[in-house]
Image (cartoon, rainbow, N blue to C red):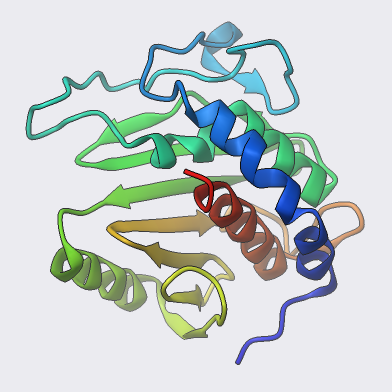
Length: 205
């Protein structure tokens, strides 16, 4: 069983307060959001719609490449980004999201590095199992992380993969320094904290 670091434990204290905020931001997630200047936004923006950008790759609901689910889009939206800012103690600039081959992703940019969040939407449990295990092979499954989602593991570079229903979340911290945040902690703890923030958002979708 993996033990969470001090930052992840501290972030958990506020998770009960995250659900309503994340869910409310996601309520309009499938609508066309207002793009930030230059396609990016500060993660701490508070104006209605600010930072809630439509995916860079347009899709049409009802087709084989339909729009991402509301819960999926939460990873790049203003409310979740603000909660991640608070949990890590560092403000991010979040890129415009992309939606390609049922993979929704965006980059959180910081002065000292970057972190990529992505969600892969699958059609059924068999596909979800296969994709989850494929990431384990590609990225190096270093052991299960308990009590998050319906299965999770850290990778050799400290990133974390979490599955829930037919979605697979990847918090890729490859672009972050070994110690990050205020106060500094390991990139592995950063990945776990961010994943827990996102799962708290999903619990209210």
